[in-house]
Length: 192
Image (tube, rainbow, N blue to C red; front, top):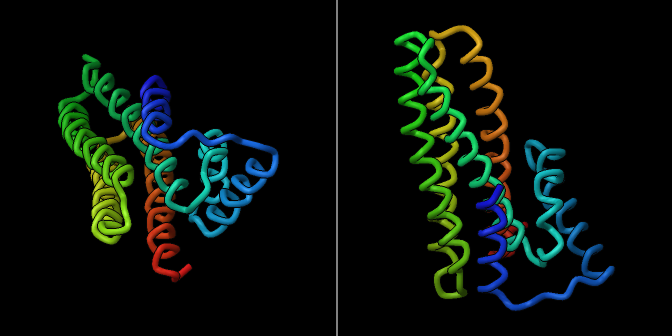
């Protein structure tokens, strides 16, 4: 959660100050509802982005907010898996799967950081390039989460259950993030 506040503060320092009025709040909430209406996990999309949506004026703003939320969730999941990997009474198979999961989640976090950086530096001249990079990195982050879960196919027990629940949530947030990035790219080119 501290990272989320840091990133929000960083975003506010790098962008112009925006004053939120009742009309702007309604517009932002409408953008959120419309943007999330076709997301695979609509309710989660709205719920996870509502706290950040007040300053969103464009689909690209909403995509950046979604990456911020996704990065926070991925970092929390990575910490959770790291703690599980250090439990002494897990089987060798579980320990190996957890260590693999820690590695791929670290990759996922790095890919999401790169995505956020790319989206913060989008300009008219590099829009397609940066959006393409963002789409690639978020897609890779989603694959990493799936890879972590796949490593537990032959493992059973409490560790698998706890991990699957956490990873399912991260995968859903990441899926929504990829959708919102694709939507922002389409809106820029006029293909809403």
